[in-house]
Image 1: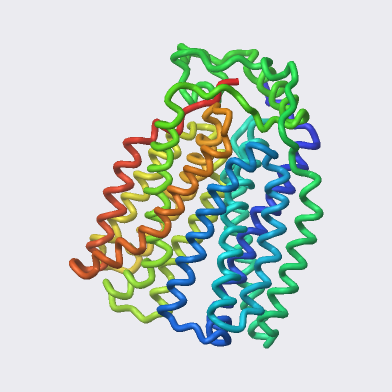
Image 2 (image 1 turned 90 degrees about the horizontal axis):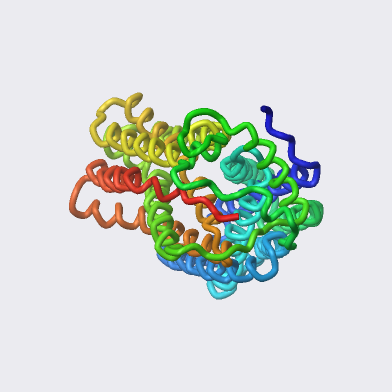
Length: 435
């Protein structure tokens, strides 16, 4: 039986959140492409810039941890709108900074806004996904990547046109505020208790994550003919009522949060390694020119974005446990190719496999974190986010430290082994919320 189409408010909320994810990526990219101009105007050295970026990262972690309890208390819609507005305004700061102190203040504010938005918009994404008969989380993350592409192209174009940095970032902030104003009313509101809370019983013992997603019974033999109508009706009722569901925390939630956080740390560590070291690895290993070396990150980022656009449908067919398990194995295989290859096309293939392998993994982890069934779902997600973000920062640093002991290409064994361990723990993302 075909799944019922979600009600218009849910579809509108999904489209609005696509814009918010894209806005987040765009604002981040606009800051990144203007780093050279900002540092030149403020007289910030490369070493001091590294410290300021670390400050921004620390502020982002603070914002993430604050966002969880706030989203649990006020709902993800209000916090998403507030955080997106604050991030848009904070973008103005680096453009008008005149010395290292003012730049530090501006980047701290930007980091807090970004951390709060990361948690709140993903909490809203989990909220919206519950009303859909299929996974949709990866598509939101794809729009973040597409927003980054738009922001980088817009920033580069503004610089080529000789627009002032403060003018470009101020106009971008105004555009961001306009988008937030248009999207915020369309996001889903916080929960109100309704009889529909009990419309769909929890999966019975013995039902796998994939079987539950496909409407199969505990034996796994054949579809439950009532599963799709129940889920469609309950999902629509939950979302129309505004279901940022608050349920009783199951036993072992803290342990599950920790396991999911470790998986997020591992995957984002590998992603950070790919983002920061791919071009240098290709140049160091094969001695190519800088233009050719840039193709390594291009291969990774292209397949990462493309993979996120299709990962939801893959997850709907095989389940999120399989997406994480096979995705991390594929990423590990890609790092293996990179470590062994002395041929340009094969090395580029390795970076492409890393991108496509990791593309759907993080969204599945965040979905699992948001559906643990505790009374503090957004707080749980913020903790997973925090650990994941630390992995994103730690990965490049670990590789940098190892290059003092071994060649850069040999250091790629670290994310390879980490992803293999992650594949072994992939079953943790199969945790389902209790309704």
